[in-house]
Amino acid sequence: QVELVESGGGLVQPGGSLRLPCAASGFTLDYYTVGWFRQAPGKERAGVVCTSGSDGSPYYADSMKGRFTLSRDSAKNTVYLQMNSLKPEDTAVYYCAANLITTAQTMCDRLLVGYWGQGTQVTVSS
Image 1 (cartoon, helix red, strand yellow):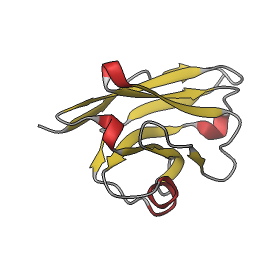
Image 2: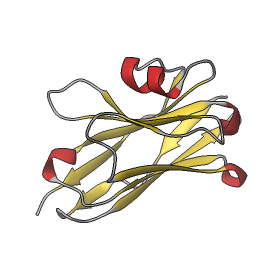
Image 3: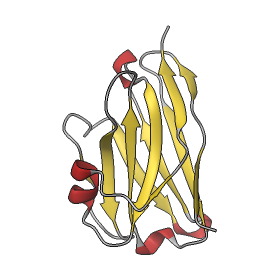
Image 4: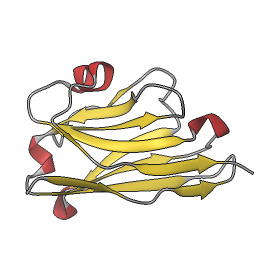
């Protein structure tokens, strides 16, 4: 059974950091383009960062570069989203996703996704 499971969300103060893990089962993430997306209240789901294959360079959606970093742990079949200097406008449900046949830019810009996780809530507030 193919599954992506995010965790690590919660309440964080402005300026704080969080790291979100996304564990995959039923398939090997190294062979897939993977990415993180977010959906804020009242807004459409949008790409944050995507990367194709285990050696691919990350593609960051507009305004995301610098504070967000995607990394992989092949041994754990897990990808991570490191989020730093968080702002209230980063409040959203964060989703990880995977697709076998797509570029990182296409996945992030067009939400061309094969598998979605269930999402994890991140709230940035004092």
